[in-house]
Image (cartoon, rainbow, N blue to C red):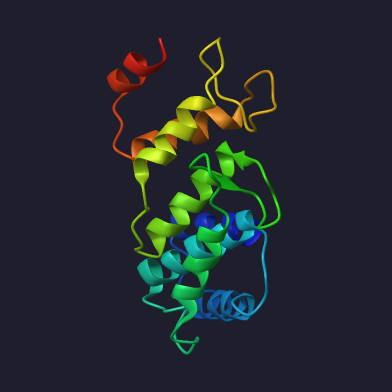
Amino acid sequence: YYTGFALRALSILGGLSGEPARRATAFLRGRLEGREALVDFFSLLYGAELMKLADDRDVFEGSATTWREEVVRFLESLRRGDGGFAKTAEGDASSTYQTFLVLIALELLENPVREPERVVSFILSQQTDDGGFRELRAARRGGTNPPAAAIGTLRMMGVQEAEVEDRVI
């Protein structure tokens, strides 16, 4: 997660090349073998994309040829009946923010989202009476991060602002 911040900063400053890029690539490759929290995993995927763009380095070079398929299978295992994604394979509740992160990860893995209309339905079900969005269905009020994740998710799913207003107001 924090490595992702550093890589973005180096990229913005033009310092993500040469030795720093080599070391960052080696670090990211070392993380491919372990299990990461989804936030850290997303940072890993994003970091890999930055390495490709900034210094033409492939973090996934030499990894198992089935790595992407295994990751997609894991992400799909987080899918719940309401169309959202849970934080863990054992979790019962879909999360607004987790759904957003899974969709970004699937996009970075160049894997289409199955049944996008169910994702949209889940996100819209998370909207509160005051117009915000909750993280989990059990929450009574919206927070700060869930609306950003909800809006990002709806945009990724191609839902326009007017469509959201028509559905929820």
